[in-house]
Amino acid sequence: MEKVKSEMVRVEHQMSEKLKEKVDLEIARVATR
Image 1 (tube, helix red, strand yellow):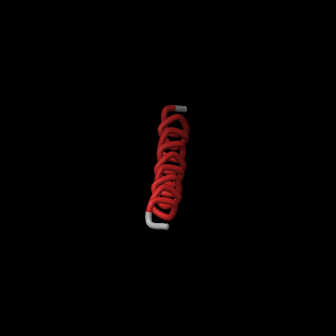
Image 2 (cartoon, helix red, strand yellow):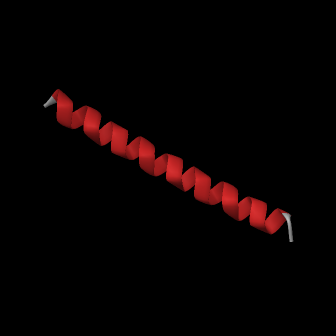
């Protein structure tokens, strides 16, 4: 059970990282216009 929990936390972390990257890219794109 612990393994599943840590796996979910890891996946959530990856998703939030990707989301942050995406947001950063959008901000950069708008800022450089």
